[in-house]
Length: 181
Image (cartoon, rainbow, N blue to C red):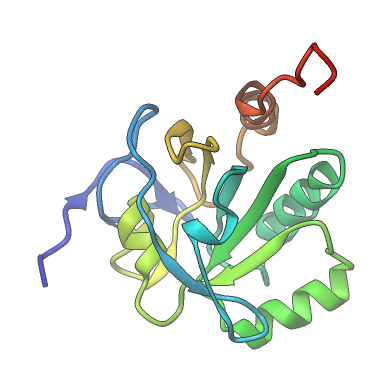
């Protein structure tokens, strides 16, 4: 197994700089595949939502206030986004994610646990070396599996730029066929 790239100066956790493992993705990059585990213990991959625009939010833990608020916000937005899959990924255990979904009433987003091997975190450059958590980030992947938007949030306690992320999602959704087909 290759040693992952280590990146510093990208983000902090509670004011302390942390080391991120994995590449820094940029718009235009091919979206890396990954495997996470859903609350039902079934694996989910990038290919699980093939052919759709994806908004993927990486959060440290759904059990924290900012992560909870972020996931709720994206759940509200997901209910209004046709043809878009919204996935929130954390290193929480699937059981904790299942409890969060039940308590929050979140039904428009999917949640995925990266606890097993940090497949998502290492592929998307959000695995926090010192804490074995994921850094806060947002990725938009178009239907052709190309990254079209990336935000690595500089401090774990800050919210992402919802406006820009949602603008990128809407721009990535194909326009309806004007001929009515």
